[in-house]
Length: 86
Image 1 (cartoon, rainbow, N blue to C red):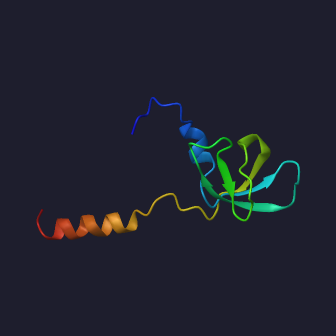
Image 2 (cartoon, one colour; image 1 turned 120 degrees about the vertical axis):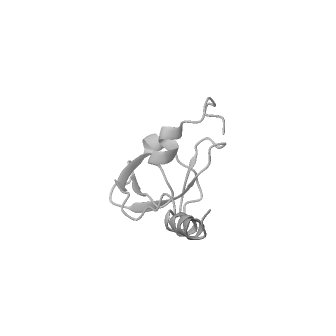
C-alpha cells in the first residue's frame, strides 16, 4: 500500500460502507453508503442510487451498524496457534 498516494484515507474511513447519510439538498431522506470507490470522482456510491456523490453533498447521520473489520476470526486463529504451541 502506498500511503504517499493522493488517496484521502481520512475521507475513506469517514464514509465507510453501511454509514447512514442524508443528502444535504434532501434532508430527512436516509441513504446507506454502498461503497467508496477511490478511482471515481465523485467517489461515494449509495445503496439504490444510480449516481455517485461527493462528500460535501452528504450529512452523516449514523455509523451505528458499521463493522470495520472482523477481529473475531483473527482471535480464534491466534488462540488455535497458541494452543498448538506455535
